[in-house]
Image (cartoon, rainbow, N blue to C red; front, side):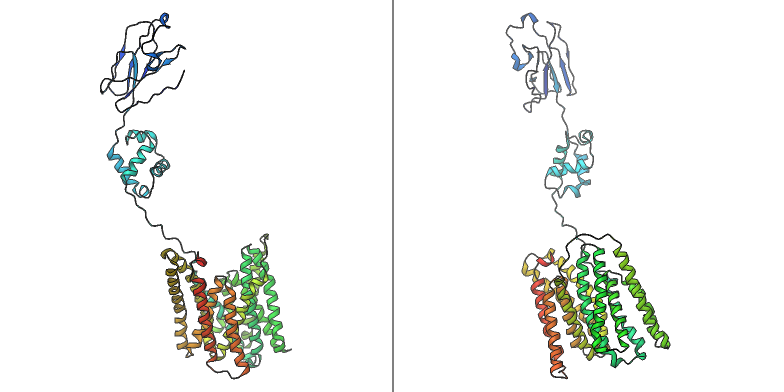
Length: 522
């Protein structure tokens, strides 16, 4: 061909395309006229080839055979609009098909896809939807009367009104495991049944200081070890298992050695060693989320203690049941660590030991504060120990509710106000059961509630990685209470509540200052 061939019509009144056909000299004209708006054919009589070089009235622009033997194209301009175009200049007219949209079918399709078309912001999104539905071009033309996909998409986009629904509610990433949290609170208190069973076998008053000192050291060591194990958990469970294996073994030795100056060569040192070994093994199971396994290991202890009101087990069972529970706990911890260590180790940097120090300081301070409360009301300490399970559940709830508050507040001041309300709600939910327990046990409620508020707000700050403020405030409260008790015995009864109250206020202020901003929750 000698050039481009424009085939589309140039106006609304042109409905056909004309192709001039080269013919033999001056034959009779023959026309085929169709009235279905599709094709009109007409043979063109051209001059004799001998007169090729002569003038051509139409010229190559309007049609005919060019000098190089090509076929020229030109449009047929109908005299008037009709179902068929009849010309007498020998052209072949191709009529362009018209599409009449089927409004009924389009309406049904729009109603069917309204939920998906409504949020679209451009017809191209509707076109992508139709293409994803696998709608063929034949269906678009025959059923809906549109020439192509984009034409139908534009019609649907114009027909369906724009709607912009709110995004669905996201899942709570901090949804707590209620059963697990409650079980952990029970597991914190169950080991105390061993002292209840073995109490008639040894003088409690004489040997209690050694056991208490070893327990305080084990508590502080366990807090720091648990934090470091969770840090190593990010690199893999095998790394966490190695950390727990080395740290728990060393912690049991340190706690036992700390009680040697108090216990001396007395056989109670064996009881101290057993207590330290149990606390180390139980810490391993709790960090690795094996609460049910630990509950099964402590079941002989729980069964023996439950039978005491109706049955005297005798010295053998009083000693044998705690030893059986200890052995079961050690075996469970060893089996769990063996499974964790079977995984191939992963490479990665080790966190510095210093980052776990504030958690150990907090554990030491909290143990001292609980010890002072235990001297005042022993049964209150039992209630406080069991409440550690609900306290953990409320820590998860606080984080979940704070994330939800980010979606409904628009200003920092509004989020601060909502965050203060969430903190107050969590504190009230934690302290209300303790208040009821204090009344039932006829214990003083104020010191218990202030101590519980101090511990919970400190744990809240630690959950967000801000460990030093909680460690420093709790250390100051424990140190102040201990200094007054040592320098001026007996200490005034108001010293402990005042120290815990001041600590609770400082920690609450720190929590509002740190957690009242959106950044820690994002």
